[in-house]
Each structure stands twice: as C-alpha cells, then as structure tokens.
Image 1: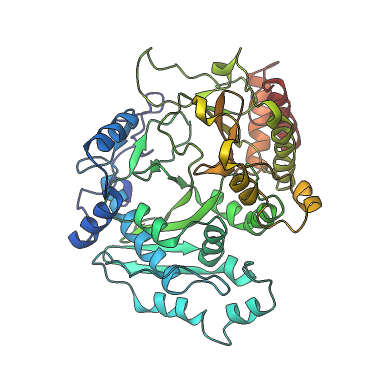
Image 2: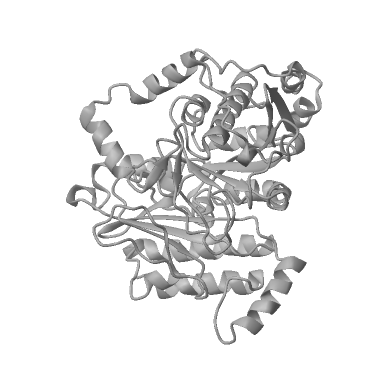
Length: 458
C-alpha cells in the first residue's frame, strides 16, 4: 500500500473515507461484460506461452496489479469501461480526413450510454455541421477549432465519463500510427492496470496499462484547464518538430460517480516502454531540494524512479546523438517557456544494448525512411531537427548511444507560473537560501534544465 507517512494521507490522497468521494466508495465493483473481458484477455495473450508469461511477471516486480480488493480497483473498472466506450465513438465516427482500419467491432461492456452523447458525436460527421464545415477549410488531417473545444459526455450506469477535445486527440493518435482498436484493447476491460510506487509528492494516482505501453494519471481541474488551453499550440509544436521529446498526450477525460465531484485524468504514451530490460530510471528537474530518493536494496527488483541527486557522478553517453539531444532540449524547453510552464521533468532510463543492437545494421534503410516521413525536403527535415529513429516501439522516446539505449521524455507539462507559484518561489527563497529548487521562473527553469543536460551528457 502507498501511504504518505508525512501527511497521513490515504494512497489516493484522501484524509478520511468520505461518502461523496469516489476514491473512497465501497467496493461495489462495476464489472464489464464477461464476453468483453475474455475477448480482450484472449487477444492480448494469444500465442504467448508459459515462458512469456513468467518473463512478463518477472519484469513487473515492483509494480502492483490492481485486482479485486485493491483500493483502486473500482476506479480502474470505471476508467476501463468508460475508455472502452469513448474510444468506440472515435472508431465509429473518426474526425474528418482520418481513415481508420476497419476491424470487426468488439463487444462493449454491458453499460447503457445516454443516446444524446452518441447523437452529438454523429452530428459532427453530418454534412453542414460546424466540425465538417470547419474541416473543409483545413489542411487534411489537421485539427479544427471545434476539435479542440468538443466535450463528449457518456452516461453509464452509476457514473459518467467525459471526453475532452476527443477529435483532436484522435487525430494525434492517428498521426502517431496508433490504431484505435489497439488503444481500446489496451485500456479497456480484460486485463487489470498496474499501479507503481511513485516518488512524486503530488496526490495524483498513477496507472499503467497491463502491457505498460500507456500511462494514466489523475489531474487537478486547474491542470486540465491549462492543458486544454495549451493544446492547440502543443499540437502545432509536434507538427513542427515531429521528433520532439515532449510526452505524447493521447486523451483527457473526466469521471464522475453518482453525484460526486468530477475528477480528471490523462492518458499518454509511457516514456519507459518497452520496459523489459530497463535497469535504471530517473526523474530530473535540474535542482537539489527534495531531489533524493532512497534507492532500493541491492538485488531488489523494486521499480523506483530516482532523482537528480541520485544521478551525481553519472553521465549519459549519446555519442553522435548528443548534438541532436541538446538542440531538441533547447527547442522543447523554449516552447514550454513560451507557455509560462515550469516544474516539468526530464524522464530518463537506461538499458544496455546487446552486441547485435549496436549501430544501424541492416535496418538502416527502414530507419531512414521512417525518420524523414512527412518532411518535404532535406532542408525541412533539418529545420525540424529530425534524427535517425531506432527500429523499436516507442522510437520517439528512444535514443541509442554507443553502449546504452536511453529512454528520454519531458513530462508534467501543466504547471503554470501564476500567483500561487510566485508566492511559493518567494517562500522557498527564504527557506532554502543558496540552494536550488524547482519553483523558479519558466525562463530560469528552462535554462537550468538545459545546462544540467549539457553538463551530464557526452
């Protein structure tokens, strides 16, 4: 269990169980349809024998499977059922200009959906609707203003799930080559999510899909407001710099149980995927206050994300890729500075390369083709700061050095430098004289993180 001994909080940040808090509701488990669960489990485990399952279990030591009796099990069931239905809407009614692969529609969880929610989704596809008319004047595949502002609410038995800017995120998933049916199968009912022991000081809850490909995190309402306000510029930045280190956001949702308070969560690609051979994980902010984590005992397989002070005396050996990495850090942190954002993290993980994985090898032609896809010319590719992508899943977050594979990504992009943070900076200046801490101006934060990266790479 994950208790905060300093604050006396429950694993999900509640002081005491409350009847109006869906985190604390009694375990009245919302079960998806048995048919849907069996089908999803069978599809994800097909052709996988005993050895694969044993290896999969070993790789997940330190992560906690959210099964019946777990304090977050009910929340997980609600999220899975809601995400399954929400993704089905985007499969049935894709945004204009997006062509999806048409596979047989899977069985949905046996939960009623309010007809008006689906009717609204269908309306956007009809000729003459605002979305359709706006899309007519847009370049093919680019989000419209209505894509960013749409809110779709689906009412289920006992809860409702909202999908914010659904068409914009559907377009983004499509641009990443992520099939909607794969996204739906990974996040829907069938196999339980994983919870991991987070070293974050926030009261958020963190989940991984069972295959560890997708990461889910609860957010405060003000964080969601900031994210949605910046979303059009975020999408534009990814279009200008397709190999950006920014984490790929895949969805923003709200969840309300009965008459309880509305809660929010995001879905994003996990930076640490595939995780099977990762040996070390770090969360870097470029400062020192509260940036130490007690490491796991030697020989332990507990999955911990360490921090800046744990990295002292170590370097990242990127070889020829270092110049690309430094330039991309400059581009991405300059973008975040323009958004007036701070307190984001550079996630890093290490994996030793096998002998046959070093160098481009026989996949050079394929890697070159996928790396320049979408660029109109060599000059444009250079301006976009593209690189040679590895032939691997999650290639946008993977950089291969001479001896190690590095998983790199910028996450937590929702903290705005407003009055609250300015007062916090003043307090920390008095509390920690002469020491570096995370709450500084966005310009100082970006500059300091880039300096840290330059000092710790070779």
